[in-house]
Amino acid sequence: MKKLLAQTYIWILLVLLYAPIVIIAVFSFTEAKVLGNWTGFSTKLYSSLFSGGVNGSLLRAIENTLSIGIIAAVCSTILGTIAAIGIFNLTSRKKHIMYFLNDIPMLNPDIITGISLFILFVTFSVTQGYITVVIAHITFCTPYVVLSVMPRLKQMNPNTYEAALDLGATPFQALWKVIIPEIRPGMVSGMLLAFTLSIDDFAVTLFTKGNQGLETLSTYIYADARKGGLTPELRPLSTIIFVTVLLLLIIINLRSTKTQGQGSKKH
Image 1: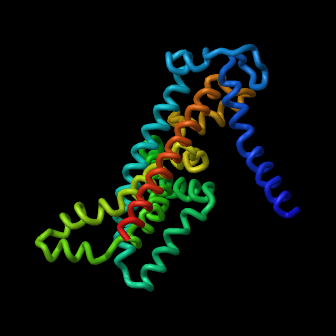
Image 2: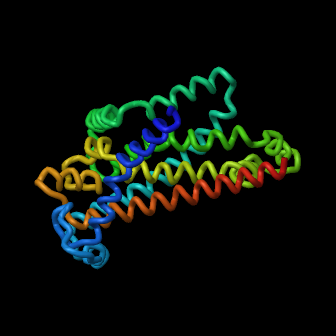
Image 3: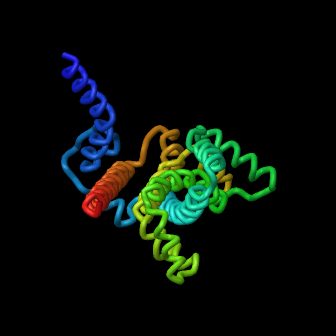
């Protein structure tokens, strides 16, 4: 009976989580402007999305979202990797302190982070816009990269770096040819996670984008919903984003499984 109840609970939870996504995906293949009104199978919304039939503000929001996400992911991966290596080489007490400080931004509500950055930019009279949004996204994405890279550092043999130095490699060469290849899976996972968090963010972006007309996909959808409806092309766009993220997760899991399999064979 307990097993049946547990399985029923899991299936109900999965249905509640994925039913809205499935509904959006299904109704992305119809021309109806109102979600839930099926007017026959059609790929017109997809063709409109890719042929430029959507309004210019949505296209700019998509471009801003992707460019900010890519810049934030790359910069936070570099900063997070450097920070993770630095934290890993600290003494035990300092390491625990830095772990704690790194966890605070992840546990902190997004709205608090957004308000804090807003006050910071206003205090220093920084004009808010594209640059401040990028800085804000790098700020809250970097701790997640640190969290992704740290397990790979713990799994790495610490003697390989010392051996590279003993064989004549400079510290930078040892870093580039020994440490980076070992932690690369964690870096890739951290970068993908940072990109996903960036394109998904709303609260931090809303507080740091200023009033110059900058829109990302999340803020555009919020403004569009307040007008009383959603642009129909958002349905195929949401479906494409979901499928892309799903494929990335599958690739990451397959790479992780393959890496763990190779590691177990070596041992």
